[in-house]
Amino acid sequence: MSQARHILKSTFGYDNFRHHQTDIIESIIHGQDVLTLMPTGGGKSICYQLPALIRPGTAIVVSPLIALMQDQVDALQQLGIKAAFLNSTLKAVEQRLIEKGFLAGSYDLLYLAPERLLNEYTLSIIDRCEISLFAIDEAHCVAQWGHDFRKEYQQLSMLHECYPNVPRIALTATADQRTRNEIIEQLALQQAHVFINSFDRPNIHYAINDLGNGRDALWQFIEHNHPEDAGIVYCLSRKSVEATAEWLNKKGRTALPYHAGLPQDFRQKNQQRFLRDDGLIIVATIAFGMGIDKPDVRFVAHMNLPKNIESYYQETGRAGRDGLPSNAWMNYGLKDVINLRLFTQNSDADELFKRMMLQKTDAMLGLCELTSCRRQAVLNYFGETLDEPCGNCDNCINPPETWDATIATQKILSCIYRTDERFGTQYIIDILLGKDDERIKANSHDQLTTFNIGHEHSGPEWRGIFRQLVAHGFLATDTEGYGVLKLTPKAWPLLKRSETPQTVMLRKLKKASKEKKKRVSTATRRTNQHLSTHDQDLFEQLRQLRSELAKDQNVPPYVIFPDKTLVEMAMNKPSNEEQMLAISGIGAVKFKRYGESFLTELKQHQ
Image 1 (cartoon, rainbow, N blue to C red):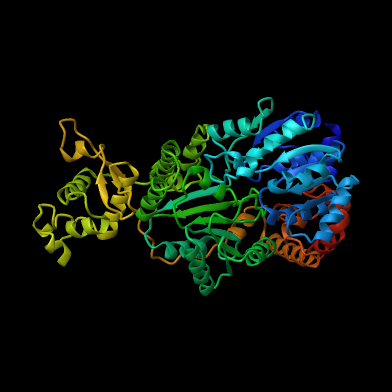
Image 2 (image 1 turned 45 degrees about the vertical axis):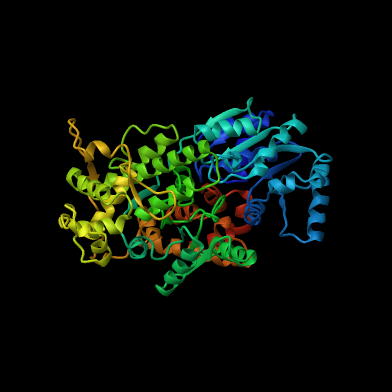
């Protein structure tokens, strides 16, 4: 471990290990299998990269997304580490050269997709090489219950059978107890050392909204908090991805679409631009993001409800990997609730799987309608306890008000019952508001006792109440996809006004603020916490220098130095090699490559 600590400082530029890194690295160095759960940005990669530099041979890293291998290898090469990848983006002659180098023992790490690793030709090459370890990244992909299931991952148990003396490390940032058990079972890790770190990402501010007009709410959020920052906007459909990206571009932000229906080269080009340019927004379906290493994503916005808390945690975790303040923002509505449940109910899965998925959806809905600390709820879902409210979510900062919605609920349930559970939300609202409508008259529903009794709430307010009643299980929708509302067993005691009094407490609906707010960039806010005006100017100059160096080498700027390193540089203003090497994230190789350029820039501001 003394060698490991030396490499940590000289190569990676860090003084100390974090979380369970010491125990994990020591286990692998001694040839033991490991399963580790560590939050995104928590330093998972070092857990296998560092042992790969100590153990003899080449480390094989199994990564599910070939589009990201290039940047991972670029980052390692910037540190002076011998790394390569084999995937379909390479020409045949390039693949042969890398295979030749692999056979010659020229690489410390080699990245492969699981499909290529399982190929007989690849295995025949591996059999002729000395392998230091196998790292299985994004190990939750093995879980058929999970949100990123890849069937090829389930075949990776063969590594244990074919190479019993080579240590394996499985890594993930997202796994509840069921998923952990499945990873252990599917990958034959029963004898592995298990290290579970805190799932908490305290730098991320969670906020969930039900403001109705999603686009306007999104723009207000971006304009106020992130007018110049990089971010990801998730949409449910390909059509909404393209429409939202076009709309953001018209608003003056550079936004790039990404979904599985776009040509592969177009997707790859947009992903590379997002990784390598500052301040871009990528608008995507969930096809985008797994394994994204960009540390300065300042916000992740969801325009629709994620299907479960695992997906929500994984996707929001792509913000603030550098540990600096970042936002996870979401806007959702009744339609999202209905669509998610219909998607599960109408799938071809067996009943056990459907039941499990519906439970996960219900847990996600529960998080949305929560009136207490959201972070405590997320952590509790993963089996972790946070003793005190976090103080960094919307419910902690602006505690939501609740109100007695019993009478409003009874009006809704009665109206649905009296219309024979044959209509959807808008029709029931129209009856409650007494709308002059030919369809209502044709059905004689203007003669119902519930007609025109709901003027204490507006149409949007009634929709919010419906959404909460669906979320809380008082209402369900039909399985045919028509949005017809049905009463659940939970609704009948309220409808019949049973002898046991029952009160329905709901969240008060938020109203979108119409006042103009001053634009405050998170990038500005985060550095102003520590930097004077002069130092802030220096920080921007250092970022500009980093961008120029990155373009010259065709690598993402964060591969040279992350923002966190530049902030520390602007604060401490090192003037020589010794002082520069004391900055976190600057090792000997990085100083040799870039030290003089940054020292020259720093001297101009002294």
